[in-house]
Image (cartoon, rainbow, N blue to C red):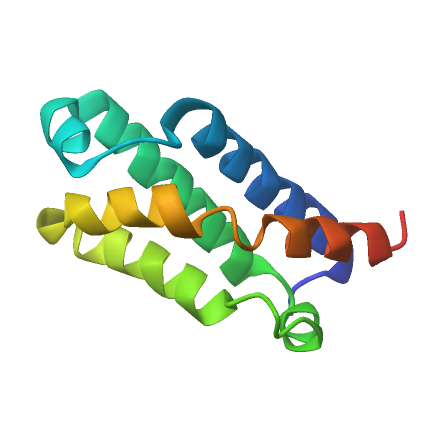
Length: 116
C-alpha cells in the first residue's frame, strides 16, 4: 500500500519536472529533438519522472482528482520507458509544447488542499 504522506512529495516531483520542461524545452520541435540527443534524453526523462510520480500517487488521491488525466500521464511514461526504441519525437515535442502545462494548475491546487 502506498503512503498518503508521500503524495505531497510526488506532486512536488511532478511540478518540478513540469517547470524544468517549461524553462528549458517549452518551444522544442521534432527537428531539435532529432538533432540534439542530450536534449531529447533530458526531455524524455522529465516526462518519465512526471509519469512515474503520478503512478506512485495513492489510488485514493488519483480517484479524488479525476480532472487530471492520470492515465494519459502514466501511459506516456510507460510508452517512453518500455518502447524506448520507438520514441516518436514529434509526439514528445507536441506533449512538451502543448500538453505538459495543462495539469500544472490542477497539481498546484491539489497540493494546496493537502495537509502539511
